Image (cartoon, rainbow, N blue to C red; front, top):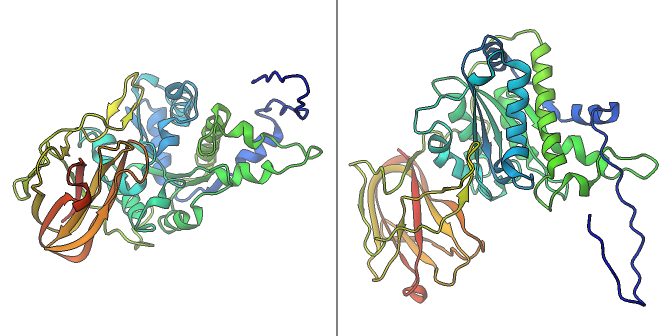
Length: 409
């Protein structure tokens, strides 16, 4: 609550405060029920719920952008929808709560295009963790996906085909302008028979209710800011996911779904992530003047951590000199991840592939410290390529940070 004191002679309009949100009422429950876009095929979810009840070790993972990171929740780590959902699943379904493990891999401002690069690092922990259930939340981040759905479906396909055969739930969050990318992303769920939750369909229709109709929750109660839910909003997201699980739990068991052809593409499913710490012998790198290490990076609190983890700490930062960063490898596609920054020290780069300029990239365009993924090329067949990265002529005295690469062999 904010109270304003006005000088004599100034008048403010009367403020009519929103009534408290009444949770667990018939109207609230009807709102939550609208979020169930599809229950899909229940075979894998049924297996997870059965394993929870039998006390087996289970890992629940949440992969997404800033909403999954916990933005808008206060305190962020305790009140985010991911933590609330993990605790609700553990408490409701598990006979051995200490055997239920939690992975939260949300990174603000990043789309599924970057999630392909960081999935093994942030979710499977480089193959040491096998998640049983993965909630995928990119419906308000993927406007920045330059492949318009190819990367999203490739990410979903990659998770679905993990050796542990995890269940996958697609979660579509919402912005305050009543928008998400359901029209682009839901066809992936329909094609592959995946359970889907659409928070927009739950909350947006009732935002415009009149005083006589009485909304369950107003827009200013649901949102912390233009993009992120408040504590009440995070709770609603949790309740939407739990409603889906309840629906699936009461259904008769289905036979496992059969593999379906892609709706968009599986092209990027096998992307391999590399940085300064794990370059294989068949990728040749001459860093040139990119010999520094940038420590001013996007920071994220993962899982239940009380500290932040730097994103892409094994990077290449341009120092003094004009020598280009050079790479040679055999592949079909190459993704570069670079650091966005508001600092005036950073400048534009020029990227050439096999001697041809493919793009200029400006790290100051976004205006904050942020991980930015972009695809340098994507071809039908693998070939040998030579990549050079150098500062644009007008910015030769400035710096730039290459965070890593994603390679499709």
